[in-house]
Amino acid sequence: MNIGDVAERADLPAKTIRYYEDIGLVTPARDPNGYRNFTETDLHRLTFVARARTLGFTIEDCRTLLALYDDVGRASADVKRVAQDHLDRIEEKIAQLHAMRETLSDLIHACQGDHRPDCPILSDLARTAYGGND
Image 1: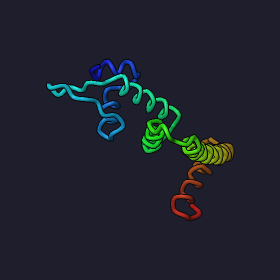
Image 2 (image 1 turned 30 degrees about the vertical axis):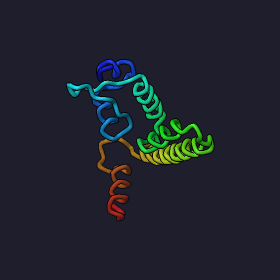
Image 3 (image 1 turned 60 degrees about the vertical axis):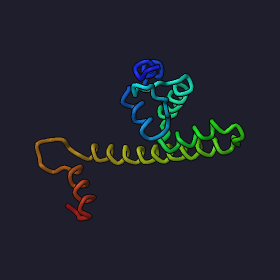
């Protein structure tokens, strides 16, 4: 398969596939004319990575997961650890987003939103940015 065919079947942009090749996640064969020649195995690896990326796994996580997938002697505990570490990072991000939402909501409610220049939102941003009180 050429890059256009594999891009369509994997539902990935060709640019992404080239990037994955550059970083070693997939290594297609090259025809004598230099064109990439993707196999079904390459396609499978690309769809595997695409699905993992959809779930938010990092490139390094994908590299680890591919290595575990290729290792028939792998322990499922190793796969679970990678997934659990990722879930822990997601939970931390969610907690951070909730805190940001609460702070921003409080600031919006404190702002009168009228013609006066007083603005608790700007005051808070300035205090935070400069460590001062306005």
